[in-house]
Length: 286
Image (cartoon, rainbow, N blue to C red; front, side, top):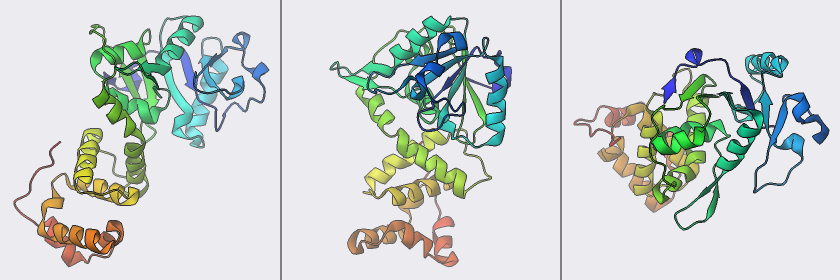
């Protein structure tokens, strides 16, 4: 399902989310009309002016915007979530609007309506791991290639499988995983901000989710402590939390109430060595 973006055919559409920042600087609903190659994607849970709504841009009709978008990316001024993706498809604009609007609303097993934020690349690149093949194919529908920006703002392309698998509703376990997408993204942003230039491992999603499960088991509920804990685990890739020295830290954290992050930052190089040189090492369960 993943391919090098350079191997994808030229995109037909750009999906833009201008709700908070609009690279086009449109100021009126009159600016978003089909004769201008711009189409509104309505979100059923949200009432907003057309020029703030999700915007599908027909790049065949608007090659000028295709060129502008390249400049937007080079400037690195716009947040990643502004760009919902570059879509390769032969589908007409009305068909694409119908498809994209239809995928916004999903249903649980007990028929509750749920919003699926696939238009946010911070969520879509996790859905690639959460959804099964049939669900991913249904989400993409007539779209053959969907290129988005990954956590490093590098193009990352999803390719729709030609083999059609049976569709099933998103189950409770998958909705639980989807509920963690914001926390996973916070951890990825922390990696980019504090551990750069090292890139996130290719299997970082699986590793991060595994360490979040361990953080739950350790009773860590402070968001900063959870980010710190998961970042260390993602870097080391073995169960540092089972070492005697870390066990002692957790006892102090629970009994004295000190933030775990502050305690880790206060450790000396010698104390860290007691953790990093520990053997035998239990591998991360992921």
